[in-house]
Picture 1 (cartoon, rainbow, N blue to C red):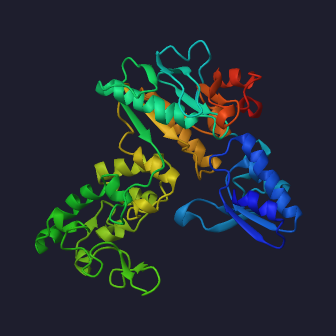
Picture 2 (picture 1 turned 30 degrees about the horizontal axis):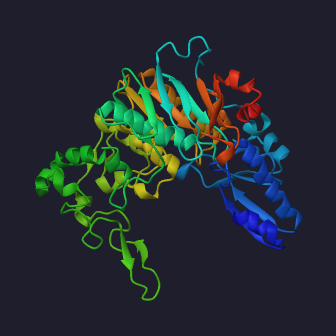
Picture 3 (picture 1 turned 60 degrees about the vertical axis):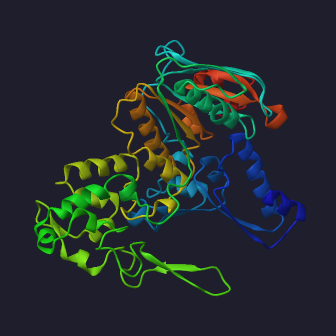
Length: 445
């Protein structure tokens, strides 16, 4: 809406900065977005945007690529230039995806004859909002992607019909009024993994959410130095323990009252964000390599570094490896979970689910590729495949073409948005959707 207003007003000499404008947009909507940006430039404006979508990047006049990795291993300009120059750059990681030499892929895909061999989930609904009465079948034990232009009814189908219908069926409760039937034999739980922030305050960190911090507290309490000082596991809690910083009470920051302006949070001047007081530095854990680290030292490390340091701590090492497998190796253990991006939050929520048998589980993801580079999308698809190999049924609302191409089954909503949508225009394997003339999504596959 803001861009449309800018084009209408015919501004000139303005720098427009857009932060991931492709979020939530179907490939057909992105064509319109790039058209708006070209209109702004034609009027004498400049446009700078942050994005990962190759459809948008291929339209750029100039690309600045950061990297080479995330977190402490990034922060450099690794390539810059026109699209052809980025494609030719040996240092560029996005270049191969722009040229088509690299493509996100998954494991073996199912054909139309085998996709339903594990059974199906059936859903029947009456009309609601702009969505017409629907009949849909979703294969169990497969990756199903629900697609369609913005406003076509994807959210209503999945989040307002399928998920509450499954939850009601599992709990033996009455169905939502518009849900006529849910048949899901063998399904015992449905798990919605969305982009809502984890926690609401700074006391929730990556280490606490992934059940790593509790194990570390127990390990440090068993050290010789801890016993000498009389420290118990509870003392190593930065929330309630006596080793927490006395100035910030373990939050790592303090709030400054700037009178008539909003309060400003700054790093604690005493612990400098470490959350612990000086006494916590008296207790060290020594691994088999002879390296010594305090608990504040570990909390300041990223997951990748901590996994090397904690290789002697079996359970901690195992949980850190799960985070690495989820593509979160660059996060620090002490990072506040409310500050994570939507995509990071979704993957962190999966940490406790990996490695379990999931034969009775349905996992539902709402646009999990938000903020993800194509290489991160590859990691995400590997996570989906792990869940499926463990028996889960995975359902994803998504616009990302790489994820759509890797689906076992696609349910395409449309044909348009609002009153012009609300119907299932095509359902089948990616190849079937590609050949469906009524599917807008199929045209981009």
